[in-house]
Image 1 (cartoon, rainbow, N blue to C red):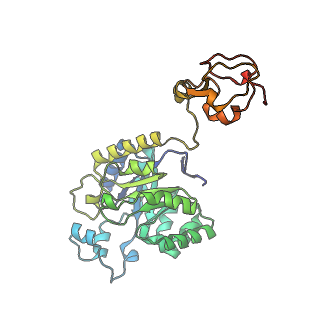
Image 2 (image 1 turned 90 degrees about the vertical axis):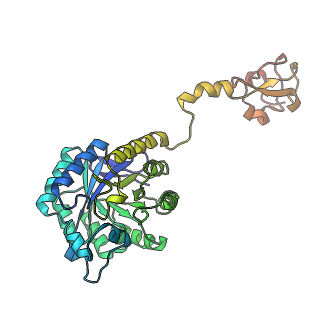
Image 3 (image 1 turned 135 degrees about the vertical axis):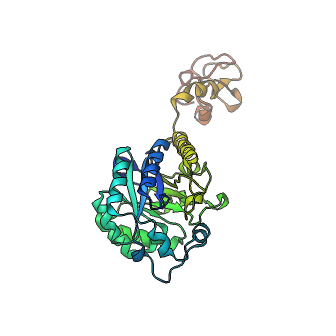
Length: 350
């Protein structure tokens, strides 16, 4: 599994988890609110901030309807009316992206049609996020892959066969990408988070895997990081009670700050792969490992038998793990009962 760079950061095993604050449409169509959310994200310790770039008339057909969670959180009868309020013009996007960069974070965005990719290129964003519904959007994936930037591809509400197909498309086009485990439910109950799918996706496709988190649990990001997520995305709002489709399934500033802190702690505790003896373990290892000890006095010339030895701490003598190599060796010099056995007490063969 090969890590790849997004701006100054690497995504993949052995690197700190990239935490993305998803502003989405929680700016309510207000540039000032978007800028405020950028500043909140920076104060909470986020690594990146993600916007959504779309044009309602391009995205929505006249027959499109609202999802249940959207109906519950907006007064609009038609999706196109709702989305128009959240469109950001190019000058506004430039201003927000500039603020993100000035706050030392990575600016990212989700396009929803090939024409939206023009804005991503104009803004010089270092990667492209693909939303879960567009996992199977062949025209959008193909257009995004042609740009040559890394892709973060969410997999919510998809069958594994659909993920297989999309991964095939991306590999045919030489795309560099990570998959994001995601449950497309707003909010996602903790019992339905299925964080085990993170490692399942990583093993199946041998690419970095992250988590687009739609739960409201403050610990879910840390659990995902411990499970191997290399990127974590979480919606950020100024007020979970605000009117709008995503506010109630987002984290407010206090929750988001705690969320990021727990991800950082999980990163530290996850450590690095490669089971080995750590320096901090050496003292306990020496004191508590076992040695072979002479159960009775041994004379020179005797052949060591299993009943001649016992096992005791510390591990400074002949290791108990090597008893089968020791049995049958000939004693070279007298050994008193209770002695920790050493290799130089024996000849090579009986």
